[in-house]
Length: 77
Image 1 (tube, rainbow, N blue to C red):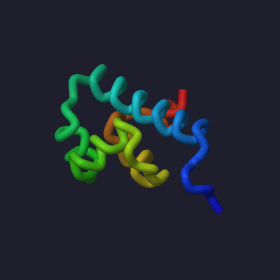
Image 2 (cartoon, one colour):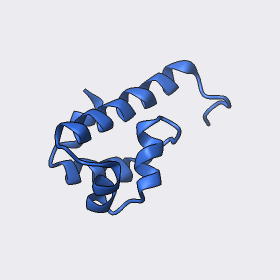
Image 3 (cartoon, rainbow, N blue to C red):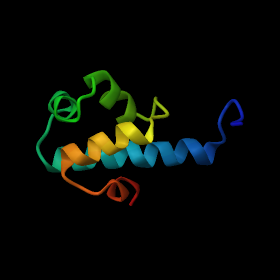
Image 4 (cartoon, one colour):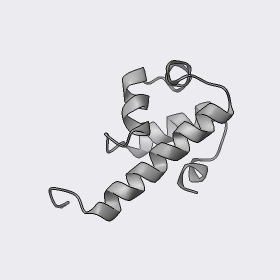
């Protein structure tokens, strides 16, 4: 069971993924709203993922990866 608050290294990984989502979205010239529409998510969810305010699910990341036309592993590199 996760500790509360989460360890810093977990939050750093969350930030890395959020930064990667934002960078890939911007590289493709997409707004948060457009990416959210393409992924079937709310804009607020994309916003929270990018700012690392949200411990997102693998399901959400899979939807984002598909919308960006990338493999999900690209979100972690």
